[in-house]
Length: 280
Image 1 (cartoon, rainbow, N blue to C red):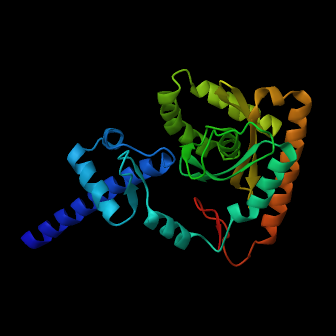
Image 2: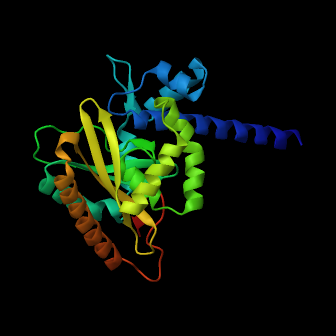
């Protein structure tokens, strides 16, 4: 009896340590471009400083993360990259969409993003910059954001069933409000309704300089949203005529991608699975 109880306690402790390490890893991944400080990590996870430091050093030793010697900030390590390569599916939606993303960037001259869903979040899996000299560094590849943030994520969210939208809204409204206190669920619902009515999403990305984005959902052959694609540019470049051009370009691109996706469907297997959206 005592041995069984001890084993259960050890198992529970091991699971808790794993969950804590993964929580730290997620924050490091989201902020990988700028790095994460120890104080930010233990405050955001609610861990005690010694516990966070111990877990971080363990992941450094395994090369899952690395620590910059000068800034002391933490970044994803070599093992994270190797695991990502090993986990990559034979054929992913990103691989199919990337040439189209680059073509839209070339045609519009602007910055184009591709987003897929992971739970309540959207993950940027590809970006391409057009020839316009002012680049839109508003989102990094690999970064998570609430699914309602950004035109590509909003387009993807709007294509989901109503009950799923309700579930995501309950979680994401509060998350978004922490960074944008004036954000409301009513505003989000209005954006979803507008996106469904027009067939595309619009979003104000930044106030200074004013940056707007336009996005559309890409659907899998079974009708479920597989990804979102968006164009981000200076608001001054999105007058009525140019907005129509961007929407036409996105619409043509989405139709082409969806046609190509249909060509990969294998009737004997389920080709799409969230969140990786892999074609097995």
